[in-house]
Image (spheres, rainbow over the protein chains, first blue to last red):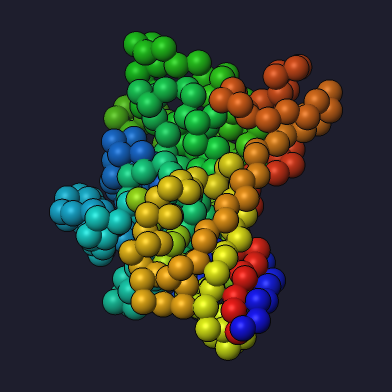
Length: 225
Length: 114
């Protein structure tokens, strides 16, 4: 019997990353701009999707893929707002992974859409580890969650391209130190875009729509090359 | 709860490498996990005992090398660790900081018998 050490040095989620690359290729080929929308439960992901669909569906054909442990509530809301929606029930899993998204992508005629919003399972821990292959990662934070969240969930706040701080209409009523929140975010993620919004009052949403339009434009330019 | 998915990935990777080396048994698995990767060692160990059963890795010992999250301030160059505090520089308060370590998340090596 021989003892032997085999050097590996391989990312633990390399299999997921490989499928995420396939998803990216599928989406690029279809010319479909995509975002992975993450947040804790109740931060306002679905409300943001409703507002986004209502405001942008004149200009873009929108597909929403909803990840949830159970129910089709979120997909129903996205459809009522005017999007095409596909529900993925994860059956208990706390996050979407690249394989689950792949199964949903092959169900749809991706060429028929301009904007894909993947609504991840509400959770600030697990979704951060699993790349999906979308063009951008977006996080919805909300005022009632508290200003310490970037400090407490560094992996999530580090891995996103845009953070929306939702429910800013509640700022006068709760203790929320915007500077403490912003400094935590900047330390982890210096190039991130921070947008202050309220899905309820509509305040600040124009900046979000502008960000999306700009990014869709950049994607189309890149994709044509 | 994502530790189950993580553990399955670890098993797939080590079985693949052990198979290529024509190993008869995997005795140790060396994992390198940064503090900023949200993984609970005990959970991985718990799932391991269930999913590695009846494989070459059934009796493998999981060896975790934990790397603490370490930051360096770009303004005053203080090097600091999180220690349950805010992520910006504890010395000067700057949020212009670099992450030196803590994001590691890989399998380093395995010990096998051939």
